[in-house]
Image (cartoon, rainbow, N blue to C red; front, side):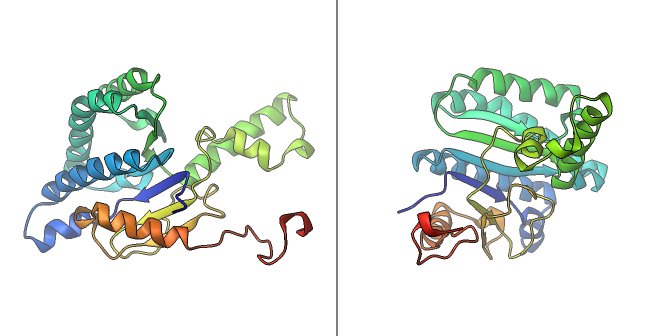
Length: 241
């Protein structure tokens, strides 16, 4: 079965799942973290080279302060507990997003996880933390503008490869498959540049109910798709223009 080299997941539905069970949103986020762990392990077993999880968006800072605090505590606890397991499973940990908005404690824990797994050669696990696709593009445009202003770059030198190089997430390949749970059918400011030719898969399951079997279903669906990148499928690649 053809598998994606880079799978990106929008883990949506923790709050709604908790509400349906008459539990606090905190309970939903904890359960969502447990599901994330199982999916990470499954992707590593399947030898998917890159897995990116939308853990905390730029817009999530607009949520009530109490909920943001809970999310940061869950992240803190997860990384402290799981970094050793990531090393054992040969998983390299990374992040994308505006780390300046994270607390000093969280930044320290994140950097520790990155450093301790830097030698790992298996799957690359990336958490999108305080991440937004528009914000990432804005950052790149600002950096390019500064280069033009200083005379180190001319406007006619700007092309797709150059823009990509200025994206903070340029170390990641474009996602082959973006999966979103909870039945919502939008990207929500996730990997906007990189998703131009990504396959999209939407699961009706809320994230805390998402299982390894649901992941397999998504991967089977992906393997049946033909990725043409704007080309005509019945012509050899040498004839496509």
